[in-house]
Amino acid sequence: MSQLELKEFEEIYRTQASRVRSILFSLGNQSEVDDLVQEVFIKIWKSYSSFEGKSSLSTWVYRITVNTAIDASRKKKFWSFFDVFKGEEGVAKADSSTERDLVEKGLSKLSEDHRAVLVLSYLEGFSNAELADILDISEGTVKSRLHYAKKEFTETLKKAGVSYE
Amino acid sequence: MSDDKKLQEFLKKNMKSCPPAPNREYQNILERIEDENKPAISPWKWMGLFGTSVALGVLLFVSLPYFQNSKEQVLTENTQQVEELLQETFSDYASSFEEDEVL
Image 1 (cartoon, rainbow over the protein chains, first blue to last red):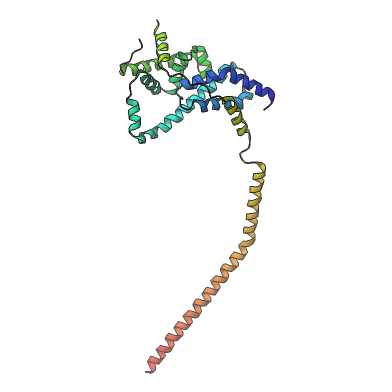
Image 2 (image 1 turned 180 degrees about the horizontal axis):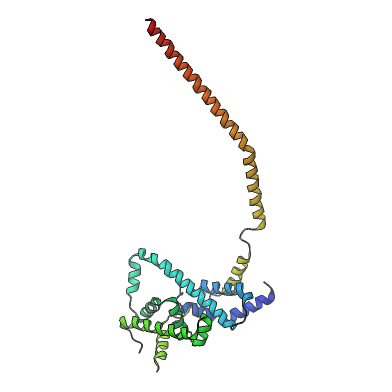
């Protein structure tokens, strides 16, 4: 690593690490957030030379973060198939019904794409235009995904007897 | 309060708070980057592996005719032994048959 590259990289870490961590955590990767933060910054380091500056640096960093989070969630979902064999432990967890658990359950029922727009919009406070940049989709698609994600999430909560209104 | 604002507050209230970063996180990232930049097997080890493979190949090539010769030798010896055994058995049987005829 050259000193210049190292200095730039350190600056990216210093300014973005807490936001990256928060996004990864909100997107449902709570147990492996430490590993994923490292993974994101290694990806940033490796692909920094290919960053063309078409979007802002932060948007590029968040795009890597969201993609890493979505990949990790998909892997987790794939392996969770084998949790069926774990027996009663999983069932007991799913039956617990505090409001926080229900929110978690409602979010986990959404597809990765829907969960991403919902969480990034309502929890991380990104605007539709920023989301379109980060997810590399049109603003219309962001609005549509947000609408369906919100609808599905609200219905899951209603079924469980929870309302935020 | 708008519906969106209510949902936002509800989510914020019910999401677990993100844990703080570990103390040495940045150092760990740099260490992992340095580890990934290192080749998994050093060039010296690759050369050692290549040399060993070549030596084994040469050894096998040189010793192959020896194995083939010894295999043929064993086969010839075995065939001779079987032939001798058959001859002995049949000559015994033939002589006993002749004796029976005389009687």
